[in-house]
Length: 176
Image 1 (tube, rainbow, N blue to C red):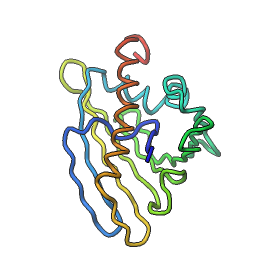
Image 2 (cartoon, rainbow, N blue to C red; image 1 turned 90 degrees about the vertical axis):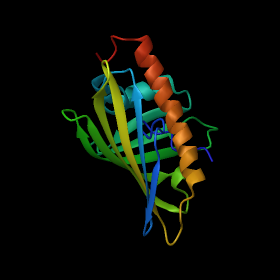
Image 3 (cartoon, one colour; image 1 turned 135 degrees about the vertical axis):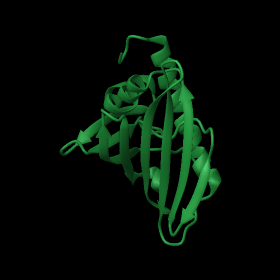
Image 4 (cartoon, rainbow, N blue to C red; image 1 turned 90 degrees about the horizontal axis):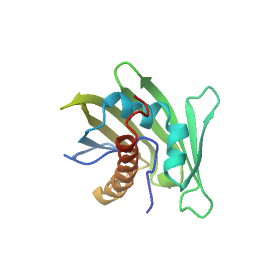
């Protein structure tokens, strides 16, 4: 299934730790990039509502609902996904941390209650960044998430990450 194109989801999988505890399956990922952490955070978190639809033709728009803590990503007609909704729990500009949950959308289907994300962007190497993420799948009933299902989402997240990374490397003054 086509899944998990979100505005700041899992990144390149350097290591993958899976843990399944009572309806919650957790994966930890880490990747490095030559892009500075503040620039990547601004692109993938702070200004994702504007940037992602420009870079990804399958994303029609991203709109804030209510007080802005709910973000709805709408996909273009004909896409296998119609929309996704995320609840934003934390956006910490100082520590470059965000926490959010996918709470609604086709990706969840009838097997997932929600998917929670915890992302941290840290300085690494010569001006680059290490991106650390924890993804927790909250399943319905006694369903056990398969690694293949997570890997498909990981693949889509890598696509998004590579597109944003390439854009930032090609445009060094953007989000500087």
